[in-house]
Image (cartoon, rainbow, N blue to C red; front, side, top):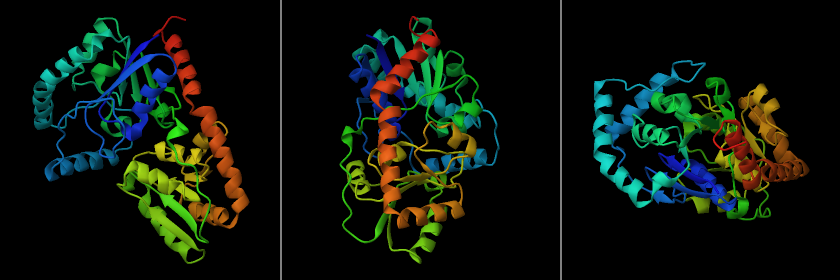
Length: 360
């Protein structure tokens, strides 16, 4: 039995928590430490609930940083560097202030007893990765798992990247950004989902639930929906900042889902929202470049990369109930095959052996 510790800044869309659940369900022992609480109320194991600046000034500063990086076209992942002496000073002071709580957590939960440390998001407790470096010297194996904007926007933490034994990602575009990284479907337990409801109205229900409008192309999606409304009888549900359980219940009543089309910052493909709707048998539209669409095995998605393609795909799905049913069934079976705990755990164990984390 392996002892696997996950450390994540937050429980991104519940994905780190799903890994933690998978390890335990498949016979290993795991805990997950999250530094900050997810505002969207995903489940937690051990949340330190550390303070995170969220005032107007802090939000504006983060927005300006993202805007500056967005204007730079990058073909490879960059190393994170503080933008100025003030940001560097902030990290130094912050790390100093949280150190007593981190050390108490390590002691209270016996974190030194774990064999493998997964850094979800590629970030240690401390910005200089001093705890990861300490564990590495003690013989622990280090795994970095990247989920999205952590690699595209923030970049790699140099000190952690240099000691990582294995790098994994569930984002196809990361394969081009970083050389030594492996793709791994993230695990998902469909038992949390409500059963898809039968249609009760004539209007076709279309849902879009962005966590970030800019990344998901929400304005483009809304513009296409407005055109569709003039041609077909539909009900468009734009769900933002909705309680998770309530959102899943609403999704179960829908006929079509739009994950993302035309977003910025390099995001393509699908995330947790797409997995949920596929698993409920709902045809799901997303954007994918041709190489990604061809690479994804048995691709279950309806691909639309611009407003014209989105319009055409929506009209076709709205007008053809049997097509919706066919695509919906394909999606449910695909999730079982590629995102099940058993399948993902088997692949991860293969990577552990391949990279010398466990014995071959």
